[in-house]
Amino acid sequence: MAIRKTTDSALADVLQLETVTTDCYRQVRDQLREVVIRLGAKGTLRLPSEAELSTALGVSRATLRSALQALQQEGRIRRLHGRGTFINRYALGVGANLAEAGAFVDLLGRAGHEPSVRIVDQRVVELGADDATALELTAGTPALQIERVFDAGGEPAVHSVDLVPAALLGENPEQRDAGRSTFEFVETHLGPPVCYSVAEVRPVLPSPALVQTLHIPATQPLLRLRHTHIRDDEQPVAVTVAHINDEYLRFSVIRTYLDE
Amino acid sequence: MAIRKTTDSALADVLQLETVTTDCYRQVRDQLREVVIRLGAKGTLRLPSEAELSTALGVSRATLRSALQALQQEGRIRRLHGRGTFINRYALGVGANLAEAGAFVDLLGRAGHEPSVRIVDQRVVELGADDATALELTAGTPALQIERVFDAGGEPAVHSVDLVPAALLGENPEQRDAGRSTFEFVETHLGPPVCYSVAEVRPVLPSPALVQTLHIPATQPLLRLRHTHIRDDEQPVAVTVAHINDEYLRFSVIRTYLDE
Image (tube, rainbow over all chains, first blue to last red; front, side):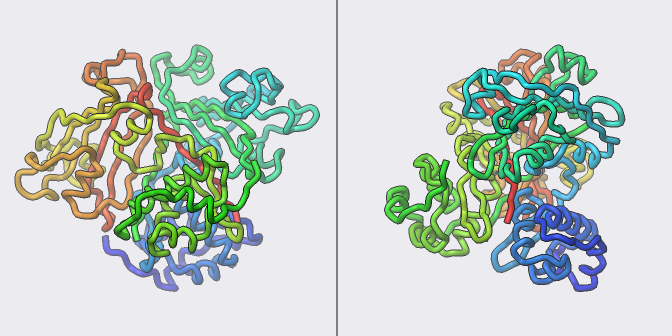
């Protein structure tokens, strides 16, 4: 497919999005991702210039650049020095990108399911050895444990357990609103803190409890993601272990080879 | 941990690397990754300026920037507008990063194993429906199939099958040197072509053939990565299906939350 330059009219056409009212980078990132998907669907693979995009979206160049960096990191675009910014066409079809920090409800929705979330349990527990190590604490330290099930059209698709040290949450952590995702919880209750997560990716067979919770045979392998969430000051602040039935949610990862 | 600025002497200390003789971006990326790991190990979390780094490494700013972008994409560093470039400390310990395009021999070596690779089979086959679709060809189209086993200390750890359309390889594709990895093969035989891959990540139980090849019980789940490699002109040029015994090689992925 030939790469052709976007014309102003094509850009105006694609930018029929609601105006961004704040300079919030996440909102701009999501909006820019939408622009990329729409341009890609039309066969346009070269993004407009930063100047054009920041004017069209009504945001500062700095905010736009942060959003471009995020999309680059997700593997959706490539920036080639002296040539411009290009859309990775085959990355467009990827609904659940392992490198994108996203809530399971959103991912299930994008995968075409009617998503919902249930808080199964929320209470203070003592950290086990592995989780304590990940959080740089000692075993037995109290932590708020939030157990969720994410449903797809009423069927259980994902099970997750969050652990957040109680000391970070003040009094009565078991009464905090768990929200609909770890991301939301951490953002709401720990300030604007998490700057990255490290997630170990493993194939596992379900425990007897997961066989029951997820309504699956004991022989069906699950994808297990064990996240450690790291705050801006390089402090690990939460662990999330998620087990995913990939009949409902299938992840991909985009490996970009950058060049000059 | 406090973030402190790198001093010139610290930088000089860390930069005891062989000089980069060409402007090759990949070499610079690998060297810069080494710098990041060494600085991080010393507790330095802020990278020197682009000017300092390009002088120290003896490369152009453009090359340096490409390497910085690659490391950012891998989740090893974060670039914050007006604040500088920071090392993700908890990403340092990640040996096998799903977002890094790497050869299995290298990944097994980094995981502490004595790695080796065997070409099990190399011949021209007819593409099945799924692989043909991924390659935008019709089922039955001839393709070179390369089957490899990657050993860790003499024990089979990873099984991979590459499929490259025969039409891209000229005459007698079955006699081409398979090299030690898909990446090497594709780079050697298709020019400098692949700019990104899309890899689907699934947990699976092994087929009877994989039980034999990988010396594992039939109940041990494997991580299955199914890559489609995309060339610079947005043409899919190869499919690689890899099955990984995660007793030997465990992947992580880093999800960075960028901000301004």
